[in-house]
Image (cartoon, rainbow, N blue to C red; front, side, top):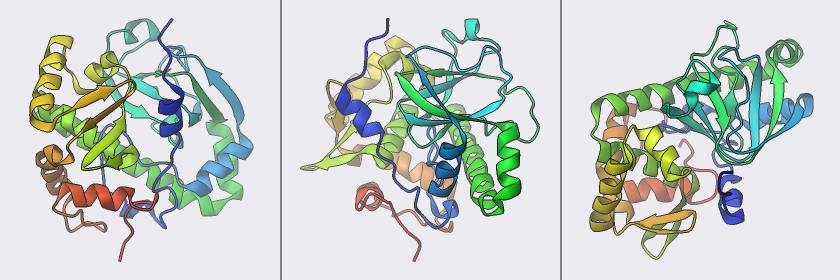
Length: 284
């Protein structure tokens, strides 16, 4: 049985930032974890869906044929590049999902095609499931949900595209730092010059997200211990945020400073912006 995550870790992942922004177009694009589903969509899905619980390791569907949106209300899930549940063990994780985000269902909502992947709980997980057919009916009655839902689906695809670019173009240490920066932006807390974040899963999950072996991960952690003072305490890590400046620069160029939310050039300013009031940066 997988070791359970701490209550403090579970509480940390329940924080939902940026979901009350007027439009997701203003959200800075980050890899490996999408922005939260807009609040108006979450509320509509929660009232229409059925409540589900999954233990760590359980798959949501037995095949790549996904028939429901699954909206996480507590916990962490992963999307695995594997044709069936049996082959997901050892497969790479393409993306993570946490509270307030879709674990699945967004990728094939219109086409109803297989999703070329498997979806599973990484931690004990609670969720709301709404079938694609039911969402069709909801959108027919609630046309005000169409734009926020499809904007979220679009920014999810863009987040995946950024992640694919990172996996293709950047070395392992940069891929790891990109993951840490994303989690710092959504879940970080400043502590006397340090940034403290809940771990994005167990070591094995992190390895599979960034495409690194356990041997490589040991080297990456050792490097960040030296260059960023990174330390782990239970299910949390802390490090100097300045060490993430280089990958912040890469993401800023990829997302373009001409976007509707222009990222600050300095990574510490960016994180302060994201974490300052629980809502993140807003457009001028």
